[in-house]
Length: 182
Image (tube, rainbow, N blue to C red; front, top):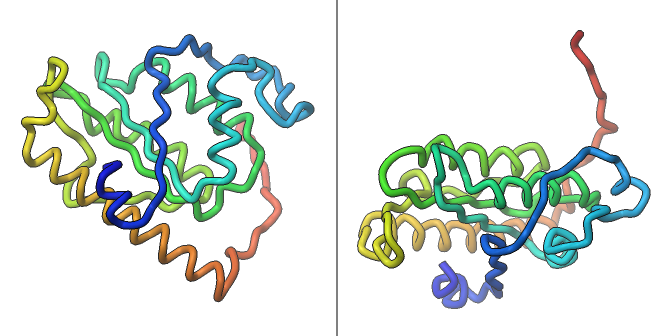
């Protein structure tokens, strides 16, 4: 995807979190006061980059039919603690598994985008690739093609949204109406 983004004139950066110690959100609410997560780690570092970005791609291995726990903790804290407007930033997720659990994991990643007013980039198939050992996924020809198409589609969306913002601005916002069901 990085190669396709470069070909399309989209600047990108890979931000690895799989080897970082990232704890889960504790819903302390301090981010509302501080403007960032109370735990000062890779989440806050990435949030600063995400604020200025036009899109985000999150990739995760599938562990026990779900995205990696570190990725989930990262996304929960990132989306909960970063209060900047994410409207019309393009989101994309992809997952890698030996065999199963890809569509459920893919769905989990996309929920962060759809709750934030972010268009979700799609491809020619669900954004997954298969491989069990390091390097095996590169042999999944359909999966590799799916990710290349995803990068092209995401590039198109980012460029199209930029043009739309210039001409029309962002969609009108409404004050959120919170409803609790007891």
